[in-house]
Image (cartoon, rainbow, N blue to C red; front, side, top):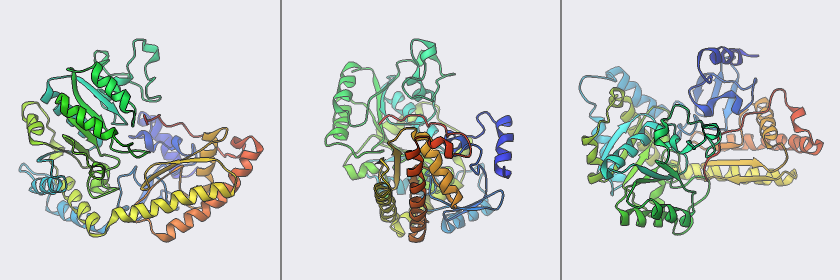
Length: 436
């Protein structure tokens, strides 16, 4: 065991769950062997506590570092802010500058409020919508964070059966009185949505959806959400926390011609520094003055400064085009290598956020084996790749060469019928299941 693995053993005794984020638990990748902690991260290279260097071809800070780790231009702006003072009794003028930038990119929106994480910004958006309508029920599809409003969808009549909607996301601690206030529907299921919209008509506070996740929207799906919410005078909330800034400069909803009432941003908008925003129509956003939404660290200066620097570079360097090119090469490489080695995989996700899954027996064992083999070759890798501006041609080429060698070994493991015997530790844990 290296320093990182030993430190993680201590973490599990001191921190419930070991980490602050489910997606960063080493058990999700390579139990007992994953380098859980880093000493330095620059570009797309990470150095662990033992001084070993890896090329990150996995989640890039869980999708937060769209430009790459420690981007020099963003860091320059942030360092200047640190020197000038990040917090004061007075307000940061960059709040107004960022609001102007966001509303210019999204002309339908006229106002902005800020938070520092995706989950809390979604909670703000739902609070605003409920305050605006005076209703309680939220119809939603997709993943929207850890807050009570969302996890309440996992409450059931039988306490022992809680969690059936999203396996792994327990609603323990969520007031049971919230049962029935968050109702899910599936992405691209227009008929299912319309059925719920009719069933709960007059009681709906908001409709919440991601604009895109693993598949593109079918013709008429997002348009139906927009037309029905307008008809019922319900705010449509677009969650851009994951997709935002990757397919275009701004929200992915721009590509589909949808103008929501509220849109929520986080992750990629500030390249690794905590920042989130809720933008919206004036008549909806203005209700925020009539409910209590306030927090000291939502006023720090680094948040808006890092977002402004990131958005500037996204525009200047045509980052979205780069993400699509790199992501496409990776997905095409997965498909080609799997075919060459007789491995059945299913590829999903937009090019900047690609995923694949093994369509063989013991898929989790195969995923774990892939991570193990790639780690030995100097890559942080799993069955996902989140593209960044720091990923260049040499990184892609080196990764695909290593992936080819890993797929060759995996083909042998599949042929043996016992892929788990090739592992040096336990099989990785299963992630929670997202609604499509």
